[in-house]
Amino acid sequence: MSVAVLCNLSDGVIIGVDSALSVWGGNGVQKVFEDGEKLFQLDKRIGIAAFGLAGLAGRSIGSFLYEFEQTHDDLGAQTIEQIVESLRAFFLAEYIKYAELVYEKPFDQIDTSLTSLGILVAGYSPKSFLSEAWEIRVPDNKEPGSARQVYKPGDYGLAWFAMSEPIERYLYGISIAGLTEIADYVAQLLARPLTQGETDKLLEIRRNQGYTVMTDSMPIKTGVDYVRFLVDYVITHYRFTQSHSIVGGKSKIGVITYRKEDFHIME
Image 1: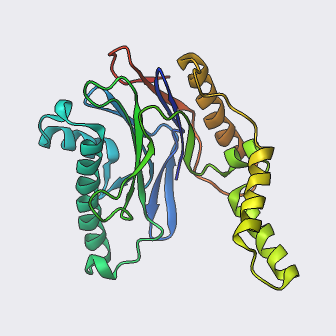
Image 2: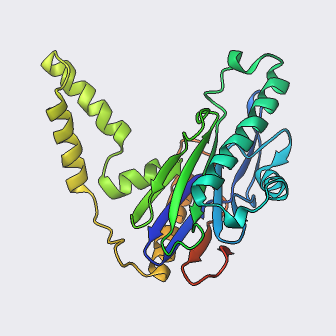
């Protein structure tokens, strides 16, 4: 698995990940490398984070991204949305080939619920002065145009992915999963399902209890520090808790701003 944190700001976009890379086998995790690469540059102005599967058919995600760059022309002239759609189709095709090889049956007969690949794509479209971010889920995003836009240009905020429940608990005091369990218990006490208004009220209470993080006009340096804090927080959390997780290693941060510089990875 992994943790990934995104911060989209008016001056640019920041992505943070942990560095633990897990190799899965038939009986679960076979090996964990703590110096794995999950953060990549694509065509200079785009940053990519991978989470979930560490690779396909023995190849790393970075290897596939290099192949994608070499086999797709004019990336520099395409919008982020166009590139996201090409990435979705590319990785879905590779995933299908890999799954059919491993399970030796047609793809529509394979249970892929436990083996997914997440790809976070963020950066600038040509001539755009505001950054944006997208999330691809393979194999969930089977249909063309099914990738999710996390932040449109001009929308600012934080988002987190994969093994990120500690962040939810830190910011809101309870995760959505925990709130759902409480709601189910209340429904049992009432001997009826909660109404939409009652469910909305529980979500409002959780939201009101959350810490306020001012991402509007937040400087890039502050955003870098905050993303690193959140990734380090999750890494440290799983270091000490009893529950086994494959989040670990150290935090890695990537940044791109409006100043025409390339997406670069900080140590």
